[in-house]
Amino acid sequence: MNELFLSSLITWLEEYSIWGIFITDTNFKVIFWNKWLEVNTGIKKENIIGQNIFEVVPQIKRFENYFQQVLQGSSVILSQRFDKYLIPIEIKDEEYKYMQQTVQMFPLLEGNVEKGIIAIIEDVTDRVKREENYKKQIRSLKVLNDIQKSIFTLDREELFDKLFEGAIKISNAPFVYLFLIKDGNFLLKRSTKSVLDYSKDLESPSCILKKVLSERRTIYIPYTGETDIKCVNPVSNSVLAVPILGKEKVLGILVLESLERNSFKQDDILNLETLTMQAAIIFENIELLEALRESEARYRVLAEQSLTGVSLLQDNKFIYTNSRFVEILGYPPRLETLNDFTKYVYEEDKNRFLERYNQILENTFEYIIDEIRIRKINNEIAYLEISMVNVLYKGKKSILLSILDITYRKKLEEELKLLSITDALTGLYNRRGFMTLAEHTFSIANRLNKKIIVMFIDLDHMKEINDKYGHQVGDQALIDLANILRETLRQNDLIARFGGDEFVIMGIIGEENHKEIVLKRLLEKIEEFNSKQDRPYKISISIGIVTYDPKNPVSLEDLLQKADEIMYEQKRIKKEKLKG
Image (cartoon, rainbow, N blue to C red; front, side):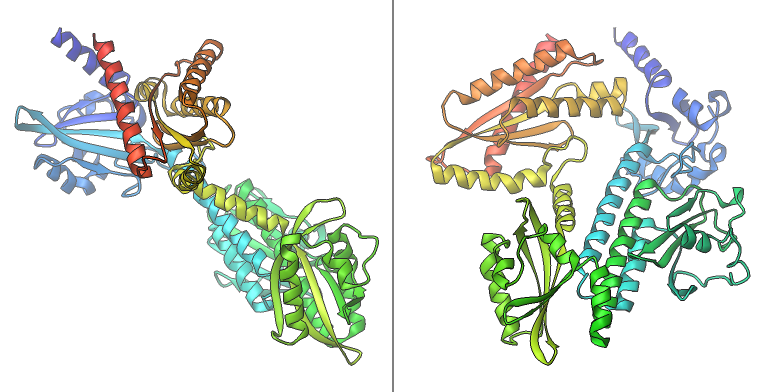
């Protein structure tokens, strides 16, 4: 029986394993080379068995010291973050030329005698790409949020710095150029490299700068070698040019070039367009404030064109409002006095706004920037960034009040916050999100003297699903269980994926038998899912349930540990029944 099992195991490792596996003796001569490695490396078994691994695959030589460590009895894990790959395996992918690998190596033992080395290679390319995309999304949101916050505080040079640095962070492009357009001329304001002399090509209709200026749109060329595009570095293989669009004209152009083909993804382009749009608003706001200092007539023209709401008050009465100001408020029927404005300010923010207004009136501060909420004419809540400054108008003290609708920025901030506490795969809370919100649930339960149930859930057979069907199917199983939990539990119950195949649920209960009701409903939902869904697997779970009573307080950590122990005991009993 043991020989049959061993033979079947060797056949599976050799023919069907989803990992690359090779075994060497103590002299590093290969004694096992499975089919996965044959297919992916192109090296046939008969050409490597009995050969020194470092001679047949010389790229592995750089890891020889780790092979020596394994022969000394140590196990070694080489993650993708340590080194991208052990064996260079070319793949068809836009981002990676070689398969990204995690490698495990451990001694081959016969009793206590070391007979060689076992190496297991896992393809982690898809996982690495998901992680990189997640990090890039957060980085882009931070860049957009940062420049949006600076709308009232930047001068021209600071704006150029923010725009230039933001474009580099979003795109990771090696060549980035920021041109300002003035009187039809392209003025280079920032660049990562010295720009070439394009003067002879500027009049050509194929010049990318001219095309963007005339067409007033973003132009992306995935591979410049297939076009006659000009005003591009000859070593670059892809180029992206994004206009900085003002209300009436193109203010500038952001040019990004890469040595790689197809370098810029759709999300990058969208984020760069949002960045330039925000920069255009700030640029026009700077021009507006500069114009205000020069002349009232010019100020009025630019104020009417501004995307910022601008108003002027004397003796608490509006003597000027531009069209954008009333548009942001939702076109109120009357806007003559300060009271006409404050009645739209959210009740909880009204006192703070009036206090800030009086501080400017009394010269406590030279200028004030703050955030308030308003309830527009259509009853919609909007977030505003307000700027107030003392000015003289016709020799009389006045207050320049500017408002900017930052509702979009607030949504970005909420999205950033959500990304930090949410599990990217299932959309449930992650461990950090659960621990943050669970403390709040604890305090409510203690205050109301209510009991809490905590359920620790483990998705059974997760390893078998991954091994048999692959990690993509395994991910779908986790998503399916997450959806079942959402459908089963109340909206105010906390549901989180703690990592791997473990989920945690916390909820306040009113009746003693509530946990039995919840458990019964959950098992029914799982049974219903298994009977209706056409999946290659069946959802099965192990559960540990504990109840928290404020009369007998324990810590959240102790409660989770107890639920975890009960869950693992149930899992152990299941395994013993299967063996029996």
